[in-house]
Image (cartoon, rainbow, N blue to C red; front, side, top):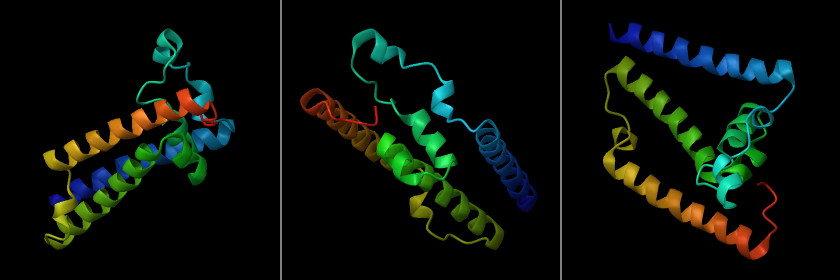
Length: 137
């Protein structure tokens, strides 16, 4: 039963990823170009904490990892983290092990992520306000 659930989960994830990558390749466009501009940035003139995430994901799917990291470093790391967690979960379920379960999402990891997320956000705002050379926004 567990292996069937894992197989279904993998098929669903790989299908979603394949459709996204194929859509980007077929249209030869970046996902960020299809999205409307940030409403928060237009309304108050300061970037929101998630500005750059769409372009980060688009560049990640286009295998342009450097630009993906530069648009939103934390979400680039989050994408990789979630991929690693999927692999660990599959290995643990198939072989009935407890390999690296400490990396599984928990309240402590969420708190750490949120703290780093807001520090990174404030740093990005500081860079834009003080240097006006933040090229990727």
